[in-house]
Length: 287
Image (cartoon, rainbow, N blue to C red; front, side, top):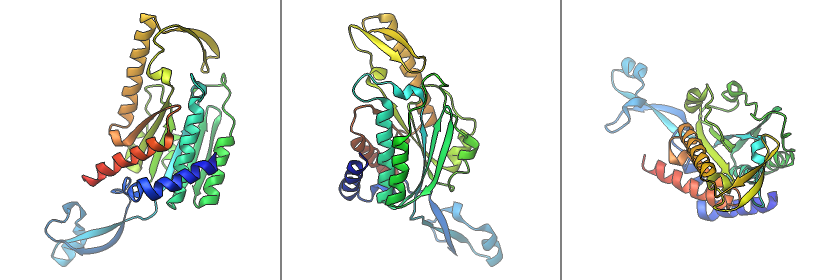
């Protein structure tokens, strides 16, 4: 699967995306270059007041865009990902998406750190770069067994450690199914530290219940079987309320449309990611 994804990643970077992958994350990954004279039209926020006071005329700090992007991927591996109403579970779809993001980054020569969090703990692979190391990191993630269903539901994410896991202005990509309304206490700080992006995976039944008929459903978060009745107005009403709350919580975490991607298990992950980068490119092109 990795080799197939790598071939598709190279093809899309060379054709559909071009330079848009990097430009979709520009704007904050800047490093100081030198101090130059301030000219009309320059950003006043870049004025170096110490140099200006010492020399008696306005000088500003000049910045250049960092060529290397660092991605910090958080894969939130919870039992709820093991649900699937079709041929693909949410976990399988999210693993493919995470692998694809790593391979896209490898093609562009970026640095990648992966935090894999489960209810049992977490592992961090730091600053992998180059095809071989990135392929190894992706292969380890794909080969990691799914967490036990009845041994805790929430992933143990070390949020304070996350703040120190990558350089400032890195791209923080949070991958999960985001079932609840919780927001980490450190989220306001993290938003200033990194460029956060959310990739949410859903099952088709989480978006819309089957319209008719009764279906036996296994809930991996409880280990129990339920009867889902698409013709029940009470069940459809409860589902709609839950879905709206879930969408609202995800939007609160990532208010801008170009900072979040919602993907359904079974969708073409590469097409969705390509469209996502196009959207981000348009956003930064307007800045």
